[in-house]
Length: 143
Image (cartoon, rainbow, N blue to C red; front, side, top):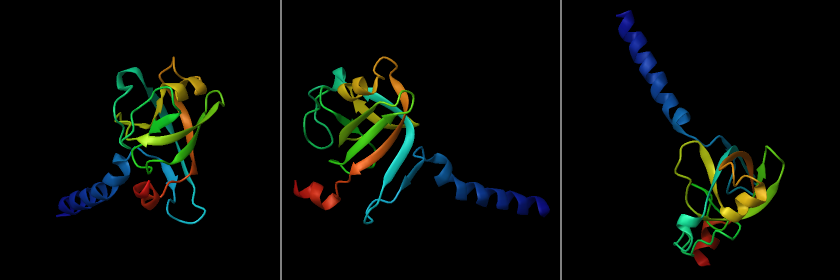
């Protein structure tokens, strides 16, 4: 009898933790509130030549020479500053695509943005992402 209680209790705890343990976005976010800030820390990667000229999630053509990025959840059109935590270099990008699709990565940068951060050769680096101008869903639809 005691074994069944422990098993059910363990299962309940495990199920309660699933949403927390399966997320790969360790962010402090308060989007949609006046004066809200969105900050994330995690791994960034970059993409370029193979996607150059293809349509992004925003509908525009991807240009690896522009300062753009892909993010899973930030509204398209959002401006964000990305800081390379290994060398202190920064770049401001516009979110115009969705991704990255590799677990543990928080942002995919264009080739130009990766070059500005000094991470192109490494492929990935630890970054801090700070939203500088949030694009609301309503204004994104009207543009």
